[in-house]
Length: 237
Image (cartoon, rainbow, N blue to C red; front, side, top):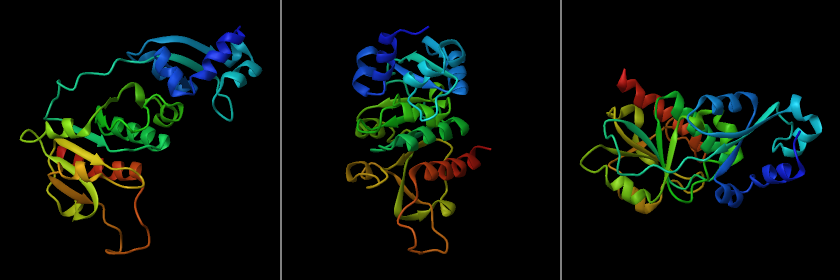
């Protein structure tokens, strides 16, 4: 059984304020709940539709079609920026605000072995239910460190290259890429900000075909992440 107060509390976790106040978030869906249970995260409670009934699950679900399982999971404390391995490859996100895009980027990072993402403070919350859903469980394996990108990217200077995706740059397919460093991806609307652009060592472009075509204004940031990660990983084989 599930109480009315439990239902009210779970529904409140759709909002960042209540997630932060209680340091918990929702993981919904059988696969995602199983990923949470198998991870290093602490799962505070799990609700199964077979146990609480269709009506109760519909009332706590944040999905249009309630899933068979929902978990309330304890947030992890942010890691300190001081511990960095400059031999690894990272993503850095500059004002990426669409939850679906962030969740997909987390899933892409998991696939390509990128275990840490740096994010500006105005990037969407990793524990947003839509982010968790879009990550398909990868949120439990990929760490996101929020904070001033200027500071963290500046620390790479002299230690590892800083790449950035731009519409005016050399094609990624004509660029010698390293196995390590950080790849900056900009917001869906405005790209990489000027202050972050100043820190970038190497600008890269995913070219349209035919070259110089003007049919499409820009490429979705999550799609860009997949293409770029794939190209970088070719140099790791």
